[in-house]
Amino acid sequence: MTPRSKAVLVLLACLASVMCVIHPIRQSDGKGATDYGPRNSIIDAINIEQFIPPATDSGKFPNLKYSFSYSHMRLQNGGWTREITIKDLPTSASLAGVNMRLKAGGIRELHWHREAEWGYVLYGTCRITAVDTEGRNFIDDTGVGDIWYFPSGIPHSIQGLGPDGCEFALIFDDGNFSEDSTFLVADWINRTPPEILSKNFGFEDGAFRNISKEELYIFQGEVPGPISEEEIKSPKGRVKSPYSHRMLAQEPIKTKMGTARITDSKNFEVSKTIAAALVEVYPNGLRELHWHPDADEWTYIITGRGRLTVFAAEGKARTYGLSAGDVAYIPKSMGHYIENTGQDTMTFLEVFKSKEFSDISLNQWLALTPKNLVRAHTQLSKQNIDKLNKDKVPVV
Ligand SMILES: *[C@@H]1O[C@H](CO)[C@@H](O)[C@H](O)[C@H]1NC(C)=O
Ligand SMILES: *[C@@H]1O[C@H](CO)[C@@H](O)[C@H](O)[C@H]1NC(C)=O
Image (tube, rainbow, N blue to C red; front, top):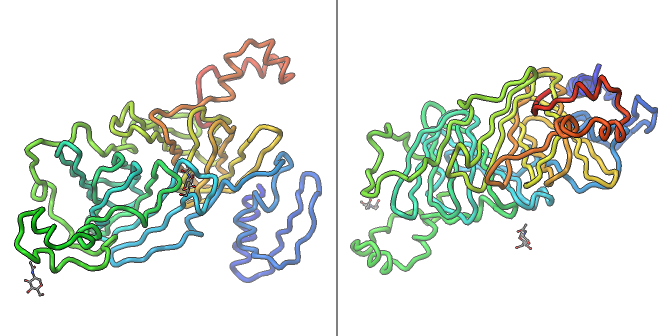
C-alpha cells in the first residue's frame, strides 16, 4: 500500500472517530517518532507528504503550496469568490488566482483592472463581454474547459447562465493582484459629482439617482437571452482576435499515461502574457521531471491527488501532497515532477506569465547528449542510456 493510500484509510478512520494511528515515522529508514499531540490528525493525513517526507527531501524552503480551502470566502447574492495572492502565498510574485462561482443570472460587475485576466471554466456556462480600445466589442458563452483572456485594462463582465450558472478559476499576471481592488463601474459613478455625470452623458439631472450606493461586485441578475438577441452591433465590429478559446476541445498530445493541451499566444493570439497547459495524468502516471526556463508556474489541481517534489539546487528539495483545489507555485527553472498517487485521473493547469509555453525535459536532455558524457555523470548502463527518450513525453 502506498503511503498515500494508507493516509486515505487513516483519514476515513479519523472521520469515523476511531483512534488516529498515523505517526511521523518513515518506513524506509525508521527515522521519526510517535506524535501524541496536540495535533490535527485530519490535516496530517491529507498532508502525508509533508508529515512523513521522503528521505530525499532536504534543506530550507519557502512555502510553495496553498489551498483554496484555507482562503476566506466572500459570499454575495448571486455567487461567491475566494483568492490566493502574494499575501497568502508569499512566493507567488508573478501570478495570483481566484476561484469564483456565479449562480444562474449572477453577475460579476462590469469592471477592469491593471492586470491581464486568464479564466478557465470549471463548471456550467457563463457569458463574457468586453469592449476594446478601438470600440470593438466581444460577447461569448463559455462552458467547461473553455478559457478567456482579457488584456490589462480591458473592461469586461461575466454572468452565470442557465440552468445553474458557472464556476471558474482566474489567474492574473501579478501576485499582488486582489479581486477586491478592481475598478467597478457603479463605484466610479458613485464617486463622480452628479452634475459631471449629466454633462458627460448628456442626461437630465439625477439620471443615476437609483444606482446602488454599495458596490455591486457580484449580484443577482436575470438569466439573459441568447447572444443573437443581446449582442450590440458595434460600428467598429468585433475585437480583432477573440477573447475566448476552447482549450479542452483542442486535440491533446496523447501519451500512454495521460494527455497535455498547450494554449498560448501561438494558438490563442490575444493571450500575450499568459501561457498554459492542461494536463491529465492517469493513475500511477507521472508528469515527467522537467523545468520551465522562462517563468514561474502556477499549478492548480482540478481533479485527483498526487505529489510534487520541487528541486531548488544547492541540495534542496521538498515534497508536497496536492489535492483538488490546491495551488502550488513553482519558481522559474526549479526542477519538478507531479505523480498521480490516487485512484482517479489527476487533472491540473500549469499557468505561466509568459507569451509561449516552454519546458525542458530531463529525459530528452540526456537522450540528446553524447552517451559517454551521460555515462560519466550517471553511471547508467548502456541499455538504460539507449532507452532515454529523444522525443518529449510529458506524461509517463
Ligand atoms: C507588491 O506590493 C508591495 C506593496 O505595494 C510591494 O512592496 C511589492 O514590491 C509588490 N510585489 C511585486 C512582486 O510586485
Ligand atoms: C427610481 O426609483 C423610483 C422609486 O422607486 C421610481 O419611481 C423611478 O421610476 C426610478 N427611476 C428609474 C429611472 O428607474
